Structures are given as C-alpha cells and as structure tokens.
Image (cartoon, rainbow, N blue to C red; front, side, top):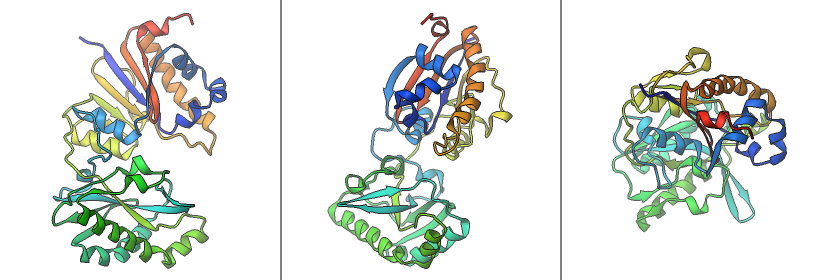
Length: 312
C-alpha cells in the first residue's frame, strides 16, 4: 500500500517569511522545514491554490469559477461588497476584514437591487460578505477574481470583452458607487471605526469541474475549502481537534487559519509548530511519503523522509 502524502497550507504567512529577520524567531519545526526542504517559488493566491488542488487542470485565467458554489441557478456571478479607496490617480480595492453584519448586508442589498432590476439582475446574499447576482444571460466579458485584486489598484482588472457590454457594466459599477457614497449606513460604519461599503466587485464566471475524491481527507475552517470538499464528496473536518492526524494512506490536506499579523503571530505559529512536529516525526520515520508546506503568494516547501535526515 502506498504511503500517505500530506499538504499543509499556511495562509497569510507570506509577509513574515519575506522578512529574513523574522525567520530567526520562528519555532523549531518551522525552522527545520525551511532549512531542509526543497523550495519552489509560487505566488499563487490561496483561493486559486485551493481550486487547483481540486481540479484536473490549473486555473490560468484572471478569474476563478466560484459563483456556481454560491447558487445552483444558471448565469450567476459573484457580486462581493468591497471598499474602494481613491489614492492619487488610482482606485485601491479592499475586501478583507470588512466585518459586515447580516443586517447591514440585507440593507445594502435592498438599496442596490433597484439598479440591478433595471439591469435584469437579482442580487442575493450567500453570507454577510459573499453575495451573488443571477442574470437572464451571462455577459460576454472576462472578469478578475476578487482575491487577485484585493489590496491592489483595480484599473487593470476591470471587465474586458465586447465594448458595448463592457461599458454597460462599468456604468452599473459607477452607479452603485454613487448610490452608496453618502448612505447613512456607511456613516454609521465609519463612526464605529469600520470601512464603508461603497462598491461591488463582479467575478466568478465559468464552470467549476471538481474532481471527485481528490483527497482522502481535508481539515480547516476555510469556507472555500469546505465547499470544495463537499463538492468532491471528501471527508472534511472543520478543526484540527476533530481530525485524526495519524495518516496511513491516501492524500490529505490541512489548511490552517490565516495568521493574524496584528496579533501575537509568534504564539499562533507555536500552535502550528506543535502540529508540524507531529507531522515531522511521521515523515522522519517513513510513515509519510511526502509533505508539502505551501505559503500562498510566496512558495512551496517539499519534504521527503530523506530531507529530515539531512545534517544541514
């Protein structure tokens, strides 16, 4: 029987490992992995990496076909709330940590819907910060996934394709921004120290073909991971406490919670290191055939039992 293989993903760690000074204070198992593993640069985002782990072919376009995970309706696009910030001659988009309540989401959707009704679209909530629109027909446009543009300037990521259709969607996008500009709800959010919600980002077009049983098991609270595991009929556990981390065969995937860099990230890494120490021992004594440690937007560390015994 073939031995088990394990892939581990550490979201939001790229910023730490890119600073050499931080590597000196990483916990022991993390340091051993960095020192002994074979490293390959890979700047793929977390979302794109997760999809690639569940599909036969890697996603190579700017968009990611995730709208179908939010609704079984035909002709669906993601329409996620976001904050656009004017910075000199460019617009920066922010979508993380917006802390939108269910009540705020409902009010925003009801405010925006009249514009979309004229556009032949219906705006619905998947959860408080993930929305979608259903359309009579899918536009002949190419979109850009939210994960690819979040924290960046939007100019080069706007919809492209048929010119008339593109201009119509840009007009809708601008009208939504004007509608939300002085919304009382946004004034209240700013008084609470939150960012205003002043735009939607459309994306997620395409068909997602998930491979059945791509993994024997998956672990993690990431919403997309849970959706993909469900689509692929894979045994999934939301927390490490629920999972059996002693592997004997098959391929397994663990996705840790994103590091909170404004918090005590060293303590968070200590918790991760405790899990990796168990993994290291299994690999060292040939109970695992291979371990991959992925850091989205940075790279991948590959380990075999041989790496564990390297003297350097």
